[in-house]
Length: 370
Image 1 (cartoon, rainbow, N blue to C red):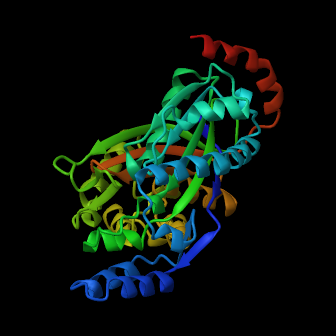
Image 2 (cartoon, rainbow, N blue to C red; image 1 turned 120 degrees about the vertical axis):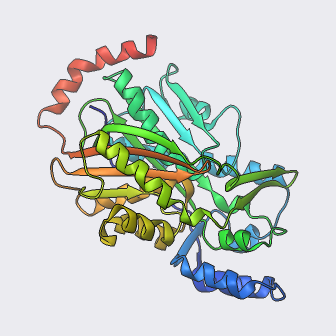
């Protein structure tokens, strides 16, 4: 069974607080007719701090899409390898043990994907599969977990590496001054996360089932308007209410697995904002404390897009993990409106695992030849 191991997470060194964000909005949009509403919405996010890949003074400038994308590539190459190495160390694997790299990001563009650069620079096998996912937004963290699960189900001896790299601040557009844009400017942060899904062994969440659900007729609720100046983020005011139609999809998947979505031991979900978590608690009939890991990510880092789910899971590990066999749900929500969902049980690595892995490593190599 595929096991999602402890994620490694890193956020940039430049920090902006909620108080600084509010003051900045007041100074830059003094005459905005809906400024009081925007300030109230930003404050209600509960985000205390966000981390940025540049100082705020540089973030507020717009040197052009070309320069921003070059910065995305430069910073990704500088920061991602260390995060990957920690994830590999936590999973007790080497780069040569990885059979597929799933790279998710919606805040910059590269072709070939960063996966090609990683294979060359970090010593991954040249036969390592590459799965870049660029257009699922915040849902991509859940999608990456699901695609890793699918791969390790197809190839039981394989190992998958998930990497999420999001520099949301590089999508800041000074000319976008709608209330939704102002809210986004106070909500999103930058971060990188990586995690290994092991085909055999490992401590973490043994993935048992996954699924997707798209709410019909909502494709324009979260989207990019791509212009010469780059990605312009569009957020419909109806998005916060999407948990009411998505909660039944979570319940359905759990029910199909013989579980009750209201009676699980842990919940790791994407925290797009506090309303998402409040509504999940309400519609799933779950104690709000169950979403403490997601809420902590939102409070300390803001919405770091596809990296949120991995950071929330990292916090579960930091708390000591769950009890052996504990059942849980993981989910990412994003454009579409799409939910990427999975179920799994907590497992502690078996004694004597390393000996078994030595015996099966040669079998795994055949995966790269098929």
